[in-house]
Amino acid sequence: MLTFPKDFVWGSSTSGPQSEGRVAGDGKGENLWDYWYSLEPDRFHGQIGPETTSTFYLNYEKDIDLLLETGHTIFRTSIQWSRLFPKGVGEVNQTALAFYRKVFSLIKDKGIELMVNLYHFDLPFELQKIEGWENRAIVDAYQAYARFCFENFGDLVDRWITFNEPIVPVECGYLYDYHYPNKLDAKAAAQVAYHTQLASSLAVKECHAVNSAYKIGIVLNLTPAYPRSQHPADLKAARIAELFQAKSFLDPSVKGEYPQELVAILKEHDLLPTYRPEDLDVIRQHKVDFLGINYYQPLRVAAPRYLPHPDAPFQPDFYYDHYVMPGRKINPHRGWEIYEKGIYDIAQSIKEDYGNIEWLLTENGMGVEGEEKFRENGFIQDDYRIDFIKGHLKELHRAIEEGSNCKGYLLWTFIDCWSWLNAYKNRYGLIELNLETQERIIKKSGHWFKELSQNGGFEP
Ligand code: BGP
Image (cartoon, rainbow, N blue to C red; front, side, top):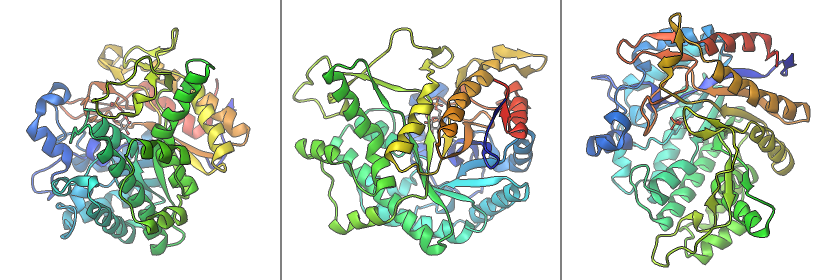
């Protein structure tokens, strides 16, 4: 039996925009996903947009019961900024305030630890209209929104999160053409990243000002960058990839400062953001209390094969190519590599290089396309998901035995939910969602997860 520490928590993560849905009269304002969908529905898988999702807004009471039925001792979701402040600033939507207080109270009443994220890729559209995170005014708006949340929900929340995967909107929206506003402008990307970090540090400041006992962290999608070989050119590629993908938020959040090499690279390409010197004190003084780490697949890189075209817009992969390792283990239902040891390597790096700060694995999971083919006797027999979780937990257990300060495991996700570009293509849940009837059916993994949580471990 692999047994985890007594205070180790078990649960899952979701987000407001991916689970709540919109209901007539709920007072929610548009966020940039609502807007983008109205503009370009074809860019969303099957033209399925963010309006419906898994109807948590209507079904939260039953869904919270399901948390218990699947053994949750912790649950992470996010507040939708555009639900609480339909215009991003100014008037509060009282219906939303009451909704979140009801949901959070119910979760607490069930004895489940509650982790609440303030931002999961979902800027209110009114703020995107004024250039979104490129505009420093958004930092002020976010700071006010964050403070409002600490003051109004702080009594119910055990752990706050400033941002989920803040590098994702930077990459997908400003360096590559995946998310709105699809800009391909590295200068704007650097400004957006910098403003996001500053906003995160200011949220930490506000949170501790409201109550010094409140705990606040940031969720980062981390993976070491694995080089193709030990050739110096591959090692350099890996070092630089890690600077952009991980350390750009990890270092300022945990150490209170940016890596010098990253600053030098940005300077060389004339990409340094506009900043005020006093901001750096804010970042230095307001470090996170803990980290959330999301891990799905490793990042493998090699030295770049080609020189970039001199007129092409700058992208970090100017310095590295993505590397597909021959013989890698793969999840054939999603196309992502499975590399369980990544968890151990992350844990070691946090222990050695980041002062062994307290952390939780806040997302890990297996997306499966066409999952209904695994239905037998009325429910999904997802042994592959159980094996996936076990494989990662073995590595996590090994790291904890060696002194890693990891306090919990949160799967992505509890009920199959809508995903940004992929809609419901890849199912991740412990619980199946029937899109026609909205019926929820616990999968085999959901029952297994409850045993895992009750036993505090599993038979490998
Ligand atoms: C993470 C995001 C989640 C979720 C997950 C699954 O990066 O934080 O919001 O979407 O990825 O991704 P996908 O549905 O694209 O497979």
